[in-house]
Image 1: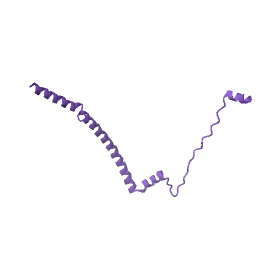
Image 2: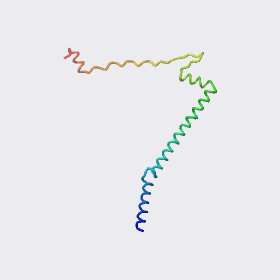
Image 3: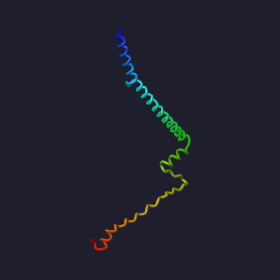
Image 4: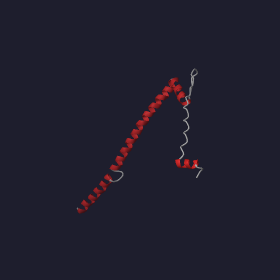
Length: 113
């Protein structure tokens, strides 16, 4: 009877080890739950992106306004009765040269000594 109790205790300890410490126990379940949550989050972002792209495709298929907007922004399109004005920022003024050091200026004034 002692051997049976000892064997059952060892089996119980091994099962507890697999449940709490091994990678396919509680830790594995928690790791998989985090992976599933991350995948669901990514799926939600991609579903939203797909919806926006689908709406853009439908807009491009149904009218010319969206095509014209894309051509203006991406390709720089100008309409037939429009005038293009390009505003150029003035170049920054050249910085004045830094003042010479007083000792160097005094030496140059006295013949370079």
